[in-house]
Length: 321
Ligand code: ADP
Ligand code: MG
Image (tube, rainbow, N blue to C red; front, side, top):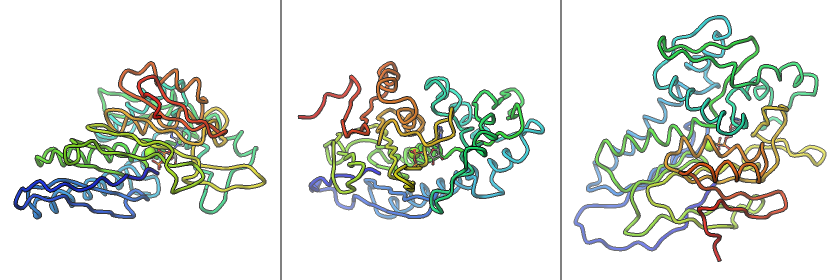
């Protein structure tokens, strides 16, 4: 989770324009924050409501917790036959497969073929036998998209998909699109660990802090941002510890176990869909390989915290003094 460092408020002198903020818990199982600069209060309130409504809509379609969601219907039926899906879900799945290819399969929405057996709140995890039996279901290549017909089909039984690793980023981008359509050009939208910013904040960049993996209130790096997205994944978000092992919500698609090669990964890039989709990679591939991949992508940068507490940066970020 990121924390925003507060900047001093400057008076702009505009009569009724104001800075507005709303914090809402519950949508997509996380905390939503919307901040924006509105020329008047009514316009600002309506814009915030519209963002929240859009996020609820995305949640309804893409949650695996709701048996009636479009995604749940796909999981129930796509191994039997191609299922016609919305353009939005089709595009997000196709983006997901692209990230699987970019990350050498570290990002893989079929992680859920094993992942569904974990319940981190209840300290439930699959045993080795259950993992071995379900593991063949994990492989992004099992997800067959047919653009002409607008369908998705799973190549074998036992495949499940979950968009928990990209859905919040997508929802944030949708929220920003809603604001832009209303003419708002200074705003922040956050869903859990995924944020996107348009414009600046009173003439200065936004400053986003990256927290220490173990000490919630300690900031290990501050990053100034304008017109950018940022996602942080951490092994401290959803987890339980058992006999000295941390079981947490980022799964290595090759093994079905929690991926622990870094403690946290923060990605900065143009859209929250992209930064969300790429923030799981370092957990699975390890810092060296992940930095190599991030450096190859022109439009992203990353800050990683290793298990030893070392902070690593991609080439585009000069280490802070
Ligand atoms: P948040 O849910 O707070 O946005 P992350 O962005 O770190 O947290 O995403 C973690 C989620 O990603 C997990 O809860 C799970 O739904 C999903 N996930 C876990 N492992 C993978 C993986 N290897 N590839 C794609 N998605 C994954
Ligand atoms: Mg995320």
